[in-house]
Length: 304
Image (cartoon, rainbow, N blue to C red; front, side):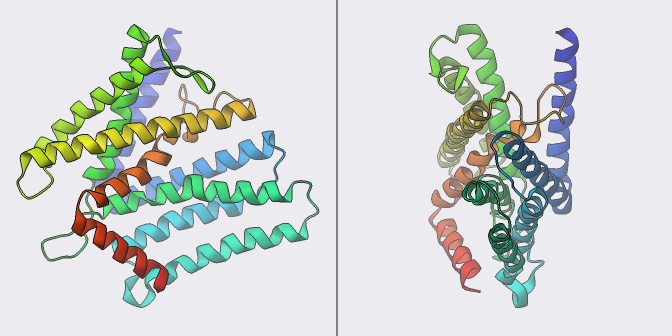
């Protein structure tokens, strides 16, 4: 028990250090890390389905497609694609998705519909949310109106999730009595979830002090940061429950064993898969100008 706790602690510290280090170090380091993470999560997901859900998903092509979507979204926001290429950088991804559908026609498989559905689920459930990190990375424009890499919003999402998890565990262990979702996750309690949310809000106020939002309005900044923490914790909890239901239906405990004491990559990023898109929508909506810019960027994305 003691050795397992030590192993879990060491793995957790290294994991957090790598995530923070790559996000802060450089955009390329961020893109490299999370493209690898995206691929590993999709690979785990497809492996679990192929082994436990009577599915036959093309793991390699599905993984390549998801990684490409992440990198394409990153390059599109970074401007690497250039004005001449623009949204055309996503064409290879669309071709890959079509390939995954068409190739199923040439195999006499028992559950072709399931294969199609699970293939698209891997893209919608994992690849798309992870790709949304680039919206957070390039959210803030410079005074000249150009887009620059900003790491604080990405870090904030993970800070809130980690703070919520730690707070929920401590509070739930001490006073947790009322089960939050006993059918799916019997160990989660209302007391723990509320405690975790309070810890995340406290962290948000520290960030509000050092990274204010708004035009010098301190109250607005603190409220917006607190709202972001609530959104991330709420959707992160749902993301955790989604993966818990997924594993429960497949009859497994962990998605993998790559992280000693923590399970697989999907286990570590399950909360993020709903929290990241929710954070993107929230941050664009709290500022009308940002929301307009967001809509314009989406319009350009699908019209080029």
